[in-house]
Length: 431
Image (cartoon, rainbow, N blue to C red; front, side, top):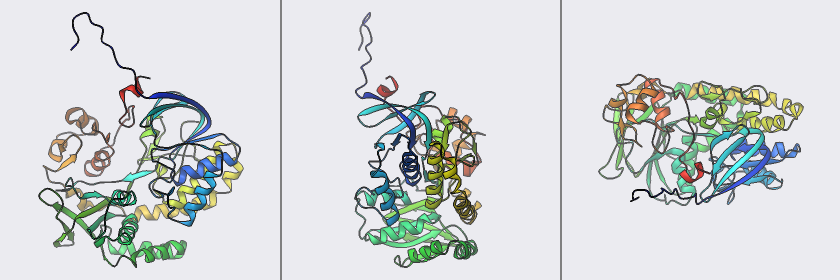
């Protein structure tokens, strides 16, 4: 303890600060970021690509540095590796200390990166909706469980129930089944008639996607139940079973894992911090993917959930435009329009049903970082009030889980983002 008159010494940051400049900085190394970086570099610009994963690929191509999941992934990763692009992996952008500069940190270093143009390709994350038992060990995100298994987590022989909404459920089911999991069923909340209409639309406009959807269901061998959703997870110290509803029918399924996700949510926190305009929870862009802030572009899921093909097209447009080749970007507009129509149909098909708003009980945790229940939140009329009075959204996830949940359950909107955008070391912020 400091004695009287003794000077308080704040220890210096253990991490070193690395400063660098780049003509074009791309944040996010998923498909959109890879396409943007490669296109900008081939157009003659000096490019830096930064991402918080161990290597390029993002969530959809996770682990691609060891084994690319598709021929398309291999093509893009080969293209990226053949270019003189500075790639910084395992680093998170946490702040913009001044215009034209961002601050990032990895486990052992901090980076101050200056740029002339910035492309945001920050991707998306799963939407979680709270229900009784959703915090039990064994209840994980659908994409999260897939990522864990890709990273080496054992799944062979484990009983898995997959529930929620969106095409990701089928992809996760096929992947887990291929790794030896016993997928008992896939519960899709969207009604059967919407799914049929979507498949018929795909067959007319994107026949290859329709075929891929059918092929995904073949190896699984599990029940695929439309108009069905989880209402409770039960177990003493870990998950033992889940209760599901379909119409008026309730039943239990024993399982070791519940992989649950209700569509995707754009990662727009960095865009908000930089002052980019949002509409409907997505970043607003013009025809060349430029945001409301001159010199800042955005591509992929932050502009609206649209899938892999649209992300690649938007990434290329953003990269070419940022590099000054607007004519080259213009040649991709027709393809973008085609895949934007797909995104619209996707959103309409998998819109969440009203019944899901009744899943949490008054004592169900909504903000699990700060242990805030639904009843505590219902005493407030907006996100700001709840945050000030309950600390909802102030834990390690910084509102990334409870923010979208309260938006759906209570109609609230996250009104502002303050730096750092992610938990960061005090030493980094003091540099």
